[in-house]
Image 1 (cartoon, one colour):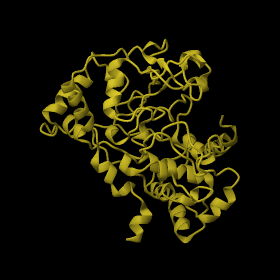
Image 2: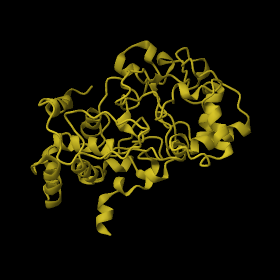
Image 3: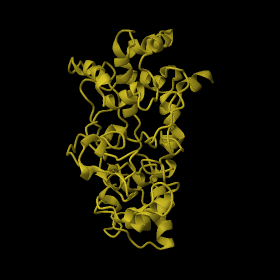
Image 4: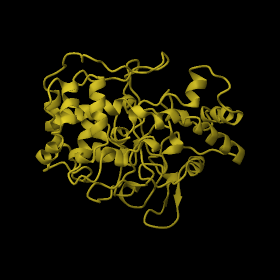
Length: 375
């Protein structure tokens, strides 16, 4: 699937670990949180993050100059977008919902369903060079795109990050990965309650919702557990390879392996029938900002997501994907269904709102540098 640009990734990593940067990146983490794993081939530095931030917001990085990374990963939506499916720079619609870039430095794997894609550097090659579907549309336009960054500003940013001013796609990938790793969201009301011991931060409704969330009756925490509220987490203190992909009973069609053929999830990578309809459990941090939900954006609201899990899956009675997902034979053992009163539903939604990090979505360190420069 990645033959064309795996060569570029190999070129990035062939020289092994380089010297430590002169100005290492300063993680602003409390003692309660582990440091993300960083590949030795791409050590974090303040200068590299700064270069990556500029590239992230620059539409010159797409072949037709119509989109930047930030077009689909908007800060106000926790670096996601509020549409069911993304659209590439050429107008090509995508089949999946853009995942928000929340704490991606802690991810064990990337994209919705790829258990072998385990580094940001590898993942970033897909939106840049991928042709099915086209996102940034770089393939075939490399020299033209690089010429746009031959400016005094980018030469200076590149020299600060890499000791000389020669910007190529290898360095673009390293810088974008560094900026993405810097997108840390750990200052929500829940964090202040759980880790800073600020007992009065959460309301009574939120506390009752938290009890429901972590209960064995609802079982939410089995797939969305840990400090990052996802099973797909790795860091310096925990490097276990947890299999964080689940079939949630979203579909149960009569066709291809009981799942819509346009996207069968992890099965497309492994070829194993057990992986049909399995997708990575995303973090629930900032979840109220990232609607619509599921890999295909097919559930519009967070309240509807709770209804879906309470029902133990989704029963579709009309349209192309008719079928009762509650009976999907590959459905996760944790999606059993449960009873939830309207009061309890309100409490659970209140708890999920406590995972919203207002500082993260307004942090000027993550915002568009070009808008700041024009003020």
